[in-house]
Length: 333
Length: 198
Image (cartoon, rainbow over all chains, first blue to last red; front, top):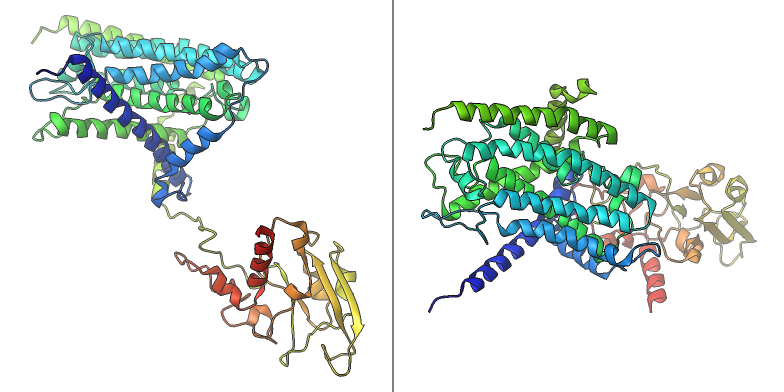
């Protein structure tokens, strides 16, 4: 008797979701701990040993808080927005391969041959969640936040896609598995170092994290797009933000850091060991995010746009052109 | 702007600073379980002292009440009865109340007192849910006979006030109730809290 394919996919999806949500919960704790250490504090340590139960306590708090809707809000869109954000953030995990067996079977829910496009499409739609939330709140600070979000996304997604196209040219495929397999000898961070730097910068902007968290900007906009949200609806945005962080960390690992390929040549890079390598790389990238947040102050709005359009975009384009020319001139090995 | 953006050296220094801070010793004191040792003459909760023979030092002269810039002290003096002498002098404080919510912990009462009866101790944990609980009368101010009678708080063994003395050895978990034993005030406070809850 063969197990029907839909059942396998369902089980895979449930496992990935459970793991991802747990990762979210503990990446939040990890962030608070690391930020604390960097600011000479011990970080949360009251709930459970070393504060390990803090995510559970936070979840309980979120669930029991009152769910408020402002009078001036557009009720339908106001309620819909967090779900758009969360859905898009979670959807990306459907195609991210975490490892592969020796025979090439991927550890992923689905293998899409246009994987990278799928992820970018989803993250782009995810911005709608933020923009709509700010717009529908019927309040001035969220509105400013949503306007900023829109402007920021326009100026960053372009450079981000440009930085990734270099990798796609080198691979000749948009499937994430092909991209990783093409990095078995040399990780793309070496030929595509410019692309990698641009990707890292734009990924921070893409996920609205410090120093590009202008969309939330506590000091100026109270909470930006989520000022009016409370309780579980705010929680959904929160989850979406962290899931996006994890997504771009995974993407950076897949595109530039060799995915599940072992950094040490004589160690295996398939199966469980592949997963370990993948997690280490993605984890380091997550750590870098936190490090960035506790080091750099927030950019001014106009400077961010200036930087995006006048620095990142030309450099990304140049990188793309050079890569294309080099690949075209080199004889195929 | 360009200059700042491309100043990679500054970026590098910033990142190395934050990274090195991860491994630095954290100055946090885990307050309820570990307490900071205050300076011996920290201005905290008041205390009414006794002489070595157990007699109260306060003679009910009300100089502290006059000196108090916050009008926090109310003293009612009375004549000592010959068969039950509370203080060595003619008079003693029949009632002595300090409103700790008004008090600014300046220590002027301490300086005004001719017999060194009223002193400030380093005790600072006075929080309560009721306003009334902050008016400290003689039952809570007067030092119990068993707690280092005759010595001022900053000369008592184990430092002062007995419930904070020697407390802040780092990594030490302190049994607060044991510390309060010496002056009994903790028990009184605890009883009052129970009365509120029950």
